[in-house]
Image 1 (tube, helix red, strand yellow):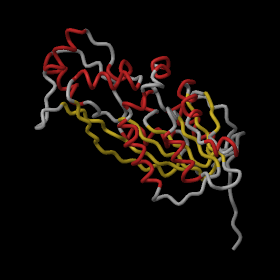
Image 2 (image 1 turned 30 degrees about the vertical axis):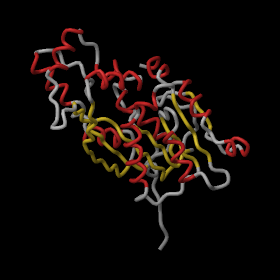
Image 3 (image 1 turned 60 degrees about the vertical axis):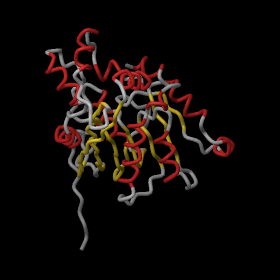
Amino acid sequence: MRSDFAAAAESYDSAAVLAREVGARMAARLDLVKIAPRRVADIGCATGDGIRELQRRYGAGRGNLALAIDYALPMLRTVRSRVPLVQRLTGRGPRLVNADVRALPLAANTLGLVWSNLVLHWLDDPLPALRELQRVLEVGGLLSFATLGPDTLKELRAASAMVGADDTTKRFLDMHDLGDMLVAAGFGDPVMDMEMITLTYATPRAFLTDQRRLGVRDALLGRQGWRDWRRLLRVWPRNADGRLPACFEIVYGHAWKPEPRQIADGRAVVKFHSR
């Protein structure tokens, strides 16, 4: 998937309708959180919508730092090309970091906010990534993320069953499993919720083209024989407008890094408060 995503840097924005909409809804959720982080990071930044939103919200203070992190170098080059001239001249553009979310080249306890829009679900096991994000957050820091949930593309699953084809569409974790993982990774007070967002397409080809432009077609849909693809796409039900609906279950999560209960050598932390 890494090479597909890297190759999609030039075409990504033309098809990133879902990511932009989810990003806007994530930003609206931040309106309800009273934080003023000095160091923020967009994990899996793609072409940079998320890091630009974080800079708009939190980038005014002197000494604030914004990190745009992605494992695809062409995506980071696109982010750099869109940094406004004023930010370039004043050194206030985002710092670009080419890294995997499971092994971030960052010191522990350094970030006040981590944002991740539609990235974590591509990992077979998100728990190591969540542990890494917990490590780099400072105490009191916030993780805000969105992932795809298990009812994503339920229309294609139903069509596969109708024609007896293999269901090769990627399976995603539900919000309860993700909530358990957040606790296992050391986060406190996780808040999870979900909603369905439906995109519609004039033809199956338009849907497949969008997934290719995003660099996720094979990762999302799996490998299917062309005869099976033709059969299941033929029975994909159209809505009242004659368009093909594609439902995406979006799982949102917020979780905070609590104060440690023990130090690195395993000894418990006990606090005494004077009265």
